Length: 175
Image (cartoon, rainbow, N blue to C red; front, side, top):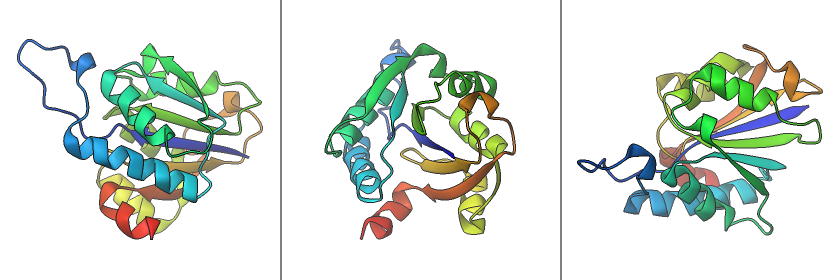
């Protein structure tokens, strides 16, 4: 079995005139949400074997704040292809992950993260699937399980949505 965790970065500052989107950092709310999400992941045994993070400042900051909540931070790699990625680009990144990784976390951006999640999910918790279909807010986390022995075999409609956690549901979920 393989488990894919898809995390949209936490709430970021608004774009600044003349500033690069790639350089945007987290807003105050994002800096509060990211460690809460890390705590949730650690408490619920959602510890990845490998983490792949977009090179954007807001995704790197999201992961750094979340990772601090784990006893030992998982191995991390930064991938430029995840910035402003299409579902196809995200799928290619995942399919390239080695067989030693059973649980993979991607930290990326909308609309790509939302689109790849809806493309991959075929079954799972009905309430979670409905909330996923309605949108993918910042700090949203989808947990998708696959009955596969290798990431290279990942294909559309092959996953089961185990849970979908959002900032709105996070408080109740960690209690």
